[in-house]
Image 1 (spheres, rainbow, N blue to C red):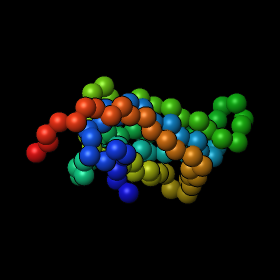
Image 2 (cartoon, rainbow, N blue to C red):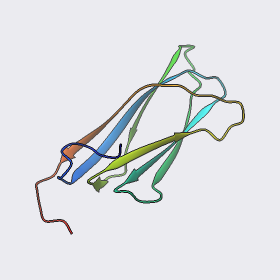
Image 3 (spheres, one colour):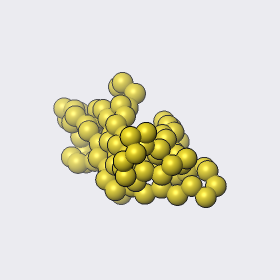
Length: 102
């Protein structure tokens, strides 16, 4: 689903966090899309854990001033034979005061 509660208030989206399985040589493409747009902000993150752990923690800020009512995240990988696993995900936002939106 593409929504963030409270649904009818505009939000200031701030950051997101992800817990993925460590996958040496693999990466994760993340695209953030607001309010049903056809494209959004993209980023690429390595899933290689330099400390030798089993998990990769990723924390990322969204561009300053990222506002909207709904948000969606698309995850992918453009490397051949480089799987990825997502174990946990969350994002942070601040609800904005109610106002008339057209």
